[in-house]
Length: 304
Image (cartoon, rainbow, N blue to C red; front, side):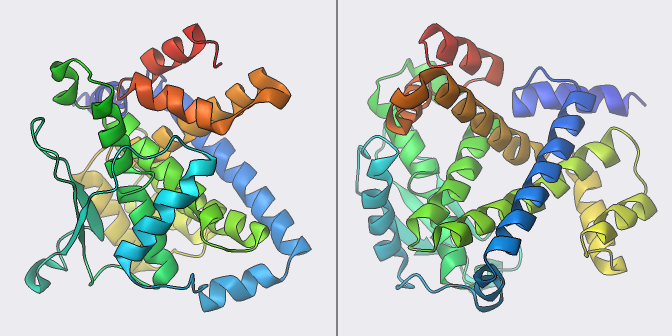
């Protein structure tokens, strides 16, 4: 009872958006459509993209520490310099590999400056997979965002408040941004970013379709089949995961879309004088908050 109303509440409380479920659905479907069209255009103009997906590009190292150092240096062209280069990389115990995420950043207590990223060898694939994972968790993702915000000396209460849409949206947004730092052909880098966005948008759409609009397992299978993932085992696993964890994908999906939207709006406002470093600096200094608040402060600051 009142499941749809509860899910709408989750969009506000978990994602931090004042959009209605139908507005979110439409935004995600528009994103899928635009990304598929752009991907098709890239593919028709550059057949090397297929080879890149089949072979998985090697970015020159499989060492996570080296990758994080590489990212620290590379992001300076688009982001403010990192406030710390100190971190530790650990690995989850083998017994927990099946049950834990591919990687995660441990948010430290407010009075401790220890930055630790845990990697799960049982869940991470080739070197490019590790690279974008470290971009999400490290630089310019969670570790970078958190340490940068703490360096602005915010009111301590802000460090204990939770804004999952901002946090995971930022990390997903910069994860896709990071393909441009992997030494790939520009079209290939964009294709990998689009592929990640499409996959996440599919899950984000199903999050709404199942929990708000009442999609059944059969509906879910039919939708996934359009993308080539419609076998019974996959459909069942996705359906049960989303039923058991409502609004778990939207902070990543919608959050990333919001940052992309703000980036595009800021670029249009600034015109030829647009500087991505200044845009990202403004977002980072405002810090974690709901998206209406973030948009208001970006507008006040003349960014949007």
